[in-house]
Image 1 (tube, rainbow, N blue to C red):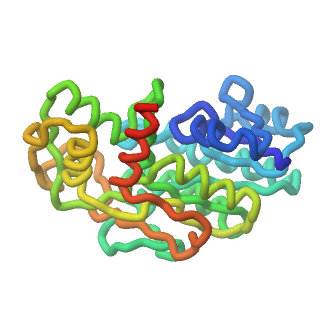
Image 2 (image 1 turned 180 degrees about the horizontal axis):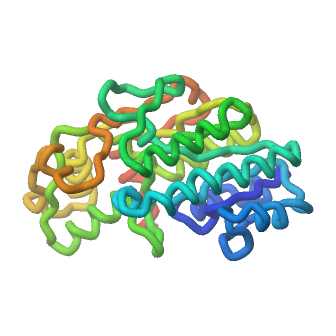
Length: 279
């Protein structure tokens, strides 16, 4: 059984991946209290005698608006932290997978595939792309986009935020003239099962099969879970980003390499989540 050492095991994506794949791989979690990735000495100490086949680096500073005012911390975690773990793993001659984001693209000329040229806007996006540059072609980079899942106490994803508002009869103001690519985390897990077993040092996109506007996404949530659609109001991209961190406007990301797992569209993902929640 392959041994996967990983950071971010207790996060939104990592915790679900372990739930889904715990019978297929031996996961070795390296939480912050055991290994602060921003401290090279700690990283060396934690990994020096650790036996693993693949290092899966998921931990990151992911607060997009927060990054604009905490640039130093964001870069310390996403750039310095990535450099520390990658260089240490490389010294051990072990395989490495870096999880990145659709935000490395500016959203101006979609669709974006694995060999599209990144042009990040915003501090978070820049930090993730700097991480990609550290990895280069020496290891695997897996880009994901707008991950969502049925349940996770510690952090709301965009889907559960929409659901929370609608459940509680609170109005939502949603963008009509931009695109996002929602990705069901269970599909990310299934795609990673293949990639762990068929490792290759290149870029892969594990992303949902359709891109929709945030407004359409909220409407789908209302339809599938039978909430009041009249709570969902329309706004424009320009209105929404006033005074906020800039987001890629047309974040249509696709994969030309994923011929190993069929990724769901948003409606299919919601139907599966509804099934999981009513089991």
